[in-house]
Length: 209
Image (cartoon, rainbow, N blue to C red):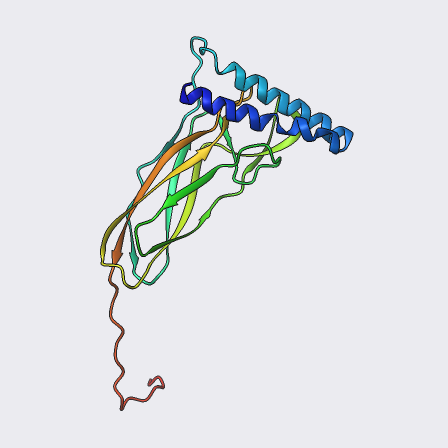
């Protein structure tokens, strides 16, 4: 089985989840979720076939990241820029329904460098023809994620590489596609920092004017 079809099977399994829960919800919400989930199943199945001429798969690309300098023992923020093809959107990190796959960034860090939380922007609230009464939280255009890093004081100064994956699910106005993973990477330059000045024992601790 190809990787594409494996991703498709996972997407179909996730998309069919609300069908099993719909009966426990209010009638109106259950109907909306059922319609949306069935639409997701059908459209994911459709993309398993050969794409018609002129039809393109959604694409998310990462812009070359800028190397920032971070002083060891102190935190720094790295901004990562991702571009979403026109005509497509991806789910935000906080989708409005539990069966939509959130956009997430997972990273591995070099030894003695701590990766803090990833800062996700709020999603745009948008409606689509397949669910005109529902507002979905999505990203479009350029997505900027902030990554907090902090080298420990024991880190040797120099450049360090970080690697990870951006997981996302893309949709257009007529179809959703199986979730994908995009490799992500960036460098930081760890600086030693200036040594703390020693105070003259005979100097008054008060500021002189």
